[in-house]
Structures are given as structure tokens and as C-alpha cells.
Figure 1 (cartoon, each protein chain N blue to C red):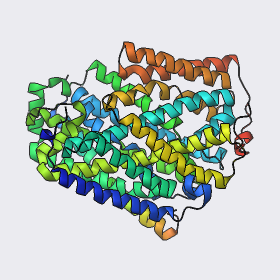
Figure 2: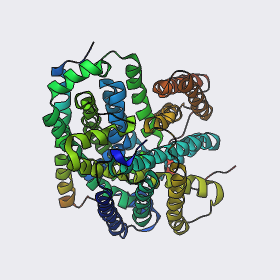
Figure 3: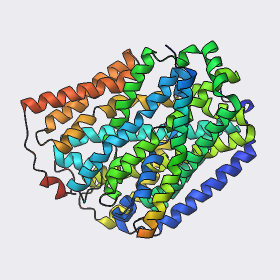
Figure 4: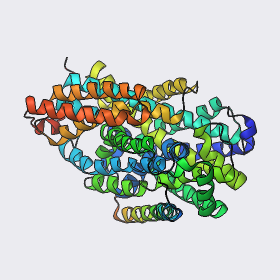
Length: 481
Length: 40
């Protein structure tokens, strides 16, 4: 499907770019990681991350294959609402701003989102949450590993499996070397590269094609792309809103940053990151609207971004998009590797198997967990199973079911463990039924709605009275039963 | 009901402006944090 005939870059140029940026990220990761001290240094960058790095890491992590490859894909499939729907992903970041402040206040010594759920709701709910969170983390990791392979293949003709392997290996390497400090440090540079790169691509697309040509060709050949009343696309928009909120509210990627930021930084960093993230899917996605004007034959929807850039801008465009997407993938892959391995280390290894493990043992184990997770993701990425958006949206039903248990658990004393567990199970189950019977674009929406009903009903019927001080007296011993 | 060319132009132009502004703001934050010793 993605033959070498479609590739614009010479494989040799592809290898040079891969090599240069791989060395840059690994050296930077090693340099930054040298200053990490102990478990908190490795997992949470010493809990002293400032506003600049905090804002950049939130932006970079959220700019991923979603925005650089799947945003053009969705713009091609759903038109205007496809890219606007993606923009609503920023609402999750902005809504997480007050939560980050609250998390820091309630759990100044916390490590993972799992810590919160365990202490707030008990072991059963914690295990359900862990299953959802780990499944989602792995799904996201695999979708980005696959995106890396697709990109390398589409632009250079280098085999999908080789490209995917290189990108995954580089991210694993510098995350192992420097932990969250390396992740956040590289995120800053990656954010700047991404923002400048996509701005340049968009500017060149506007000057090369022009709004007039783009609009008239789309109107003639693909009028549905400009349709403001496409029902499936509007459903997608709301679905994406809840999907984004669910992803951010529950995922340890965002919780670990809330723990890692300096006091007073979390609220501002997430709010500013959300505001600056909002236009990115539009800037990255709208170039897909040039497809009718350029009369490009797109063999697979998830290749549209790189193909348009290459068609418009030749070798320079292909190099630029390659660098941008490599930075976007690395910035999210490293964050996921770090945050998911934290969850495995703290909530699975220590929480279930080695409650007596001390900081030194955990700091050593942390590096092996990152390695193992990278290897597992690599195995799952090997066969290119599905398109990027499909894989990502399959997890929508899972994550959206966690929105209400998390939000009510942080603010509402009366929220209870049974309601939280039932909300996650029923929300996920009914969301999945809708995913298969209606479409991917409703799964998160239905899941969040069902979850909300269950939380409200259970809290009304069986109100609890949670003592908030239990969260600050961190019990790191893990499961008791 | 289709989006007009004017609306499309405004939408993309505003999005592009904010995206260009973002790295400038991030660099200002970075310099401020560096000066105050609050980068890490």
C-alpha cells in the first residue's frame, strides 16, 4: 500500500535526518538525566519544573500523531468539523488546569494517578482504573509507534518496520537515560520545532494553493468537506471533546506532570498550553483541504498530511514534515513511556508484588520497566493492524468512563467507591457497544454520559464522607488485599 | 450549508497567528524562568 514509488525523499536523506535527530535526543536526554537524583528525580524531575518547561511539555505531549497525521486524515474524512473537533481536544488541557492545582494541594507527595484512585476509592476501583489506564496507555503508545513507521515509509520508502523500530528505540533510550527530566527537557525543543514547522507548512500551503483555489476545488469535487452540517462530523466533534477530557483526566501522563510541577505552576501551565494547542489541529489539518485542488491520489487516509506537504513543497516540504512529525511523535512517545512505566512500577510492581521495595530498588527497576514497555509496544506495532484514528478511538469508550469518577473524586466528598467502579465498567461497556453498532465517533460521548449518570445516581443513593487528609498522608504500601 | 471562503480564511489565519505566537511566548517564559532560577 505504501510503496516506495510514493516516497518523495531519497531513503539516504531519510536515514540522515533520522540519525541526526536520534543522536540529538539521546545526547540531550543523557545530559539532562545526569542531574536526576533518586526516584523522585527520575520519575518526577525533582518536583521543581517551572512554567516554561511545564507549558511546553503539556503542549508537546498533546501534539502527537493526532495533530500532525490524524488531523489532516480527519479533515480529509470529515472536513471542517474534523479539524475543529480535534481542536476541542484542548478543552481537556484547560479543564485539567484547576485539577492540577487541586491534585498538588491534596497530594503533594503523590506519584501516580493510581495512587489517587487507590487512596480515594480503595483497591477494587483502583484495579479497574489500572486496567483502563494501562490499556489506554498501551493503545496510545502503539498508535504512535505505528505512526512513526507510517511516516518514515510514506516519506522515504524506508520499510515501515524499520522506521517504527528506530523511532521507538530512540525514545526508549533517552527516557531510560534521563527519566522525566529528559522527557520534559526534550519536549521544550520539540515544541518549538513543531510550532515553527507546522506554521511554515501552513504558510507555504496558503501561498502555493491559495484559499480561493482550495475552496472552489473542494466545493466542486468534495463539497462534504466544507459542509457545516455533516451529522457524523458534528457527533465526532462532541465525541472528541469528551475523549480528550477523559484521556487527560485519568492518564498518568498528565498527573505525573501535576506532581512534577513547582507549586503554583500547574494551573497556569495547563491553561496556557490548552490555549496555544487549540489552533494547532486547524493549522496542521487544513492542508488536507488542498487535496481536491492538487488532485492528489491519497492511497491511505492516514498518509494525507505527509503526501500533501511533499506534493506542495517537494523535497524541502518532505524534510520539514518529517522533522516535525518525528518531534511530535518523540514528544508524546517519551511521555507515555515515562508515565506508563511509572504506573507499572508504582501501582503494579510495588503496589501488588513488592510493597516493601525502597526508593533505590524502584529507581533501578524504573529503567527496566521503561525498556520492557518499549519492547512490548514494539511487538504490538510490528503488524500494522489498523489506521491510526481507528486504534486511538477504540480507547475512547474506556477513558471517557473515568471523567466523572476522577472529577467527583477530587472535589466531592460524597462520591463513593461502588459508584466510581460501576461508572467505569458500565460507561466502558455501553460505550463499546455503541462503538461497534453506531461508529467510533460516538463511543466516548456515550461512555461519558453513562458514567455521569452512574456517579450521580450512586452518590445520591449511597453518599460517602471521604476524609481528604487521607490523600496527603500518602500510603505507598500498595494493595492490602 | 457550507463554510464560506471568508470564514475559512479567517479561521485558518487566526489559528496560524496563534501558532506563530506560541513559540515566542514560550521563549519569553524560558528566559524569565532562567533569570529567576525557576526553570527546574
